[in-house]
Length: 130
Image (tube, rainbow, N blue to C red; front, side, top):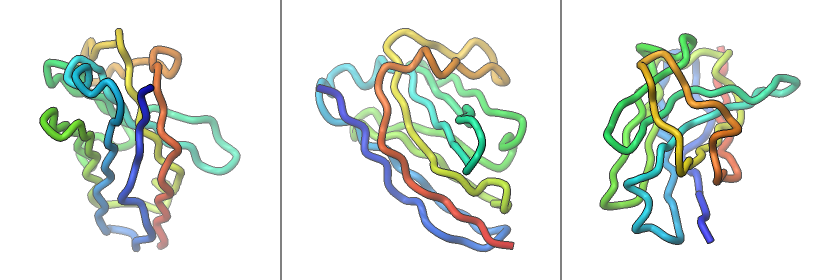
């Protein structure tokens, strides 16, 4: 069974930084082949895609985080990262990582859809105060 465990969330002031991590457990020999993504959901809002990185290292970002967030992966550690800089109050949300068996990143501004992901973590809370 594949499990994703996020960490690194917390409370920061506007302009601050956080780095989220997501470790994949189970069938780890497949990790390098997954397309990995970060999503977030703010209270009262739908979950939205934030960033994605596929098996060949291609990345994509939502317009709202482009230039501030960086997604990366360490295949040797089965770990996904999201470096978040210049945080804003509107970045406040629960952040989820997800793994997809079949998705890929078609362009830097095209995020795989939520339904394309097969496995999800439980989330880590990020709160940005003004």
